[in-house]
Length: 153
Ligand code: FAD
Image (cartoon, rainbow, N blue to C red; front, top):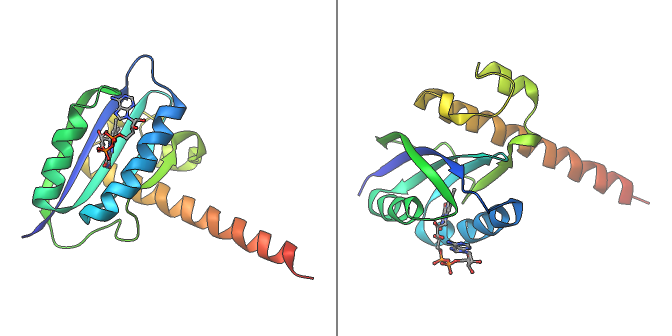
């Protein structure tokens, strides 16, 4: 069976907040690893932007679960296609808070000063997610290097 990429945007539902998002991220990492799904989730105080990549049946079934989740609303499909290779192959679910994304990246994709993924085209969405995940990876690596250096006698 081939692999597919699916990208959607949605809005955090009223009554839910950062702790609910952390629970979603935790469950997603665990479940996606078991399902052979990789991807990325960028979330702000109001919006989600998620990319799922993996076996067609697994991605379709998961998306059907996700769209019924009451913790978000206005789920809008941006992209669905067969792919030859994954972009987020290192991540069961890379998650990045929009507040941690530099303004430079937000500006580069020309969607104003705030994170509003409803403004993205499908192409922009995947490029934006790749950029924020790469930025996050570099940040975590440099933080780890600093800790390692500080620990050296
Ligand atoms: P469950 O046992 O059903 O739930 C795990 C925990 O999540 C529960 O103990 C509870 O604390 C909490 N929870 C579940 N549903 C609710 C609810 N309606 N209200 C409040 N708390 C609740 N799942 C994935 O597996 N992979 C993903 O990539 C993924 N991405 C998501 C992205 C978004 C934006 C949202 C809103 C949800 C996403 N989910 C994802 C969650 C998905 O909708 C299902 O909740 C999840 O797959 C069910 O997994 P489970 O049966 O293992 O966990």
